[in-house]
Length: 162
Image (tube, rainbow, N blue to C red; front, side, top):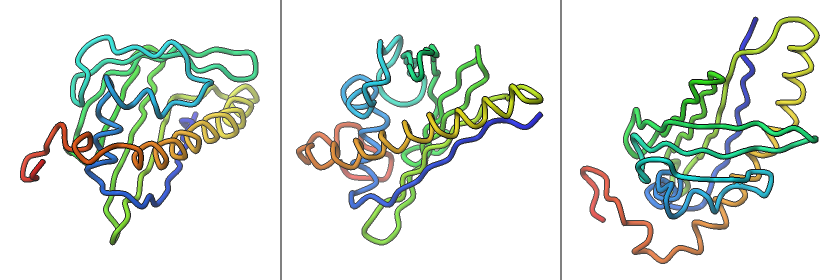
């Protein structure tokens, strides 16, 4: 039984630190990136980066999935990972500087069911989750450009001025 895995990426014409601020600041910025199919967004603990716990619901095709992610930062400023222990979902945001742009990648994986139900689940996930991730990237690309420079320097990374 192979896991379901969805992966999308995009080159965005923005500084990686500004994009990191948008993705890691769950209190002030992250909710602006979520499309309308996400509802009930809340910060349960923390608010920025490592240790933050967020919750939300994702609705599509008449079904609603409740998600609760505990965030970690295995590579500070470059990789943010959320884990939902209940459904064994792992969602990861990766930032990689490429010239004057930043590649932003979102991937998620979770266990699949065997047989026909698993095939059906994988197809629905590919269609629904991939679309939602692309919408998040659309919103990130637009949102980061609206922030004044001081907003993107609120939580400096070690070794960076901010």
